[in-house]
Length: 435
Image 1 (spheres, rainbow, N blue to C red):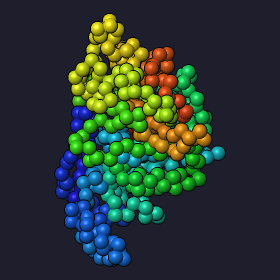
Image 2 (spheres, helix red, strand yellow; image 1 turned 90 degrees about the horizontal axis):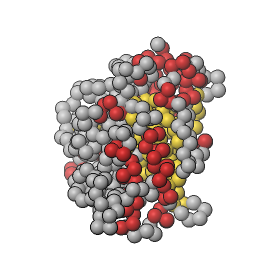
Image 3 (cartoon, rainbow, N blue to C red; image 1 turned 90 degrees about the vertical axis):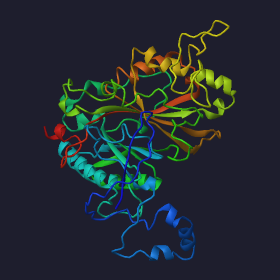
Image 4 (tube, rainbow, N blue to C red; image 1 turned 180 degrees about the horizontal axis):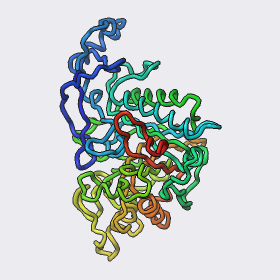
């Protein structure tokens, strides 16, 4: 069976890759049972399916599956190659995502948390490899891995619930209050956090359902949010994603090829919490966009609010999306070409003592509010080695004078320690829970 390994280019987009040879691993129950590639079975499959499912009837035990289409075949390793990081941090953005938080059940403690993380780790590894777990629901039958990633994090309250408060990193101290916050505590925080991403919505839902079932009596759902991005291949060439305001979003992201990338995004060997070495910290925010208000403004004004052109993401000082902003450039009127309160200027590393974070968001649309406005925006997820020096520092500056703030409402928030990926046979956070 052929499979395709996920690859990342310097700009964070997914690069095309060809199928590699099968690894010979025996799969106890596989999702990969497509009967042909898109090219081989596209039109014919639709006709046969409409004629009573003859194509499905042709599959019998022992048939040799044909290669999956490119998107379905792409598999993300559970552990980052050559590093200890969990998948879903530097992985290119997927088309469909779920963010979900759990609280340990009343009376559950360290032992129950270890058992739960052991089950979740085993299930996540199987799902990411395209294998269905025991007692599978069948939701994603015939689908391949589809770039599925499952990422696990621990909240501030997890350490109290497990008797490990002495091992809680100071980086998990609660985020400060910001003036734009209107946070719903029922949709914030949580003992345990999971990020799920895939390029197929059924594969992503399948993972969500499997992990929720695995929680069993050990943990209770606290909140869950659903998001989406553009599907790979929907554009003529790989490009940075757009948010629901129509803006190119993520242009100034740090790149794995940057010399200081690991130092900015991942916890180093100097941490006192050895179990977090190679891990990262995730800040999660549900940010509702006031799209009705935003869309009343002409494009030129929207571009001044952001500090970048809407069509190609280039800074207002010229060039292309990747051209550095000239923050000292003035126009004929003597005023900065990129306004002093432009979002891109205030958030730039140059304006924040080099502070940077890796943005990896999903858009969301949860219907319409009572006033008819869309309940839509950004499930903002960012990664950093130290939230106090990255997210908090940047958000404080944005909070004081960002031209974009009047169009945003921060409605939910969470901060999570994301341990490194476990070694073979181990589970996530095992050194913490068993150390």
